[in-house]
Length: 392
Image 1: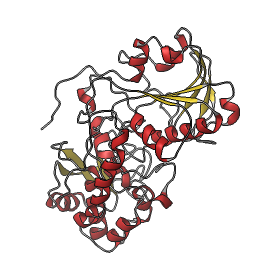
Image 2: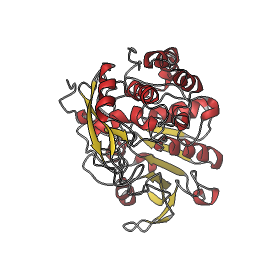
Image 3: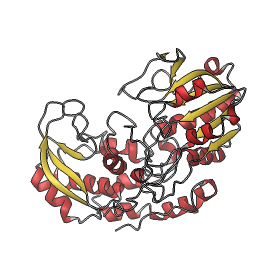
Image 4: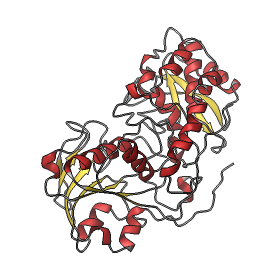
């Protein structure tokens, strides 16, 4: 079952800015933080639109993880944009925040990047670092907002603990955070008590419950391995596991939609997962051989994850159930230690090691999600409230 089958004419922040004839940027010297996902509804690059905008002086570009064109899967160096001949400063490599020298002469920083709604997807960390840098060096920040492609209705997973914060866990929010980057900017700004002038150019005609395929916007892979909306829907759960010794499908045609390792028996593993009767998903046994990344060139047994009803899907619950099953069936093969890197919740990790059932682990953060919904309410831009799905 798929809701929101019809499409609405969603306008993103850059579309609204164009319609306003760039009034907010008149006479400004601008630094643009963007990548290949910064596009108008018609598919024009935000870089080119701002570079050609009358009364606007686009002075520098800043690129996040995967680079300004989205084609890197490693650290990215500084460079020059071939079309505009503007300098491009990388914010993923030698630095993750602009330096004072790079910001000299700029009065406004414009942010336009498509997020996918998951805490450890690092574009939100880049946004936070931009807000911090602007507060230190005196720039105004304008966020050109975009929809949350996996909806903004249902947060999932534990809140990141304060001692576990990092570039893949920038702020104490759940794994599936349920916000747009504009809303996250408002939350981070308030909770970190930042001081830069902040403006959000909101989307138009987007509702919290809308998936990306209801927006009418072009799908552009937000990163090299995020190739479909179904992968984005599963990523908060499957991505949790990828620092451990398993393949999450990198190096195949369907990253984050298949999962496995050389030590897995695909039929036994799929049967064990299907016995759990997780809402909205089924597991199909398969073998696959990643061309790159973890277990490159090795035959892996595993599962294809089929989304039967995405409205019922709780991806973090899926990830935790997989972790529990791995520990039960392959205690001498699976190495769970690095699960903590993205889970960011010691209590949940300890319950896993103690052999707790999946529902006992996920129940541990249910009250936190209720508190989170109250906490973020003042910063929401699209309809009144978010709410966690009821855990099974």
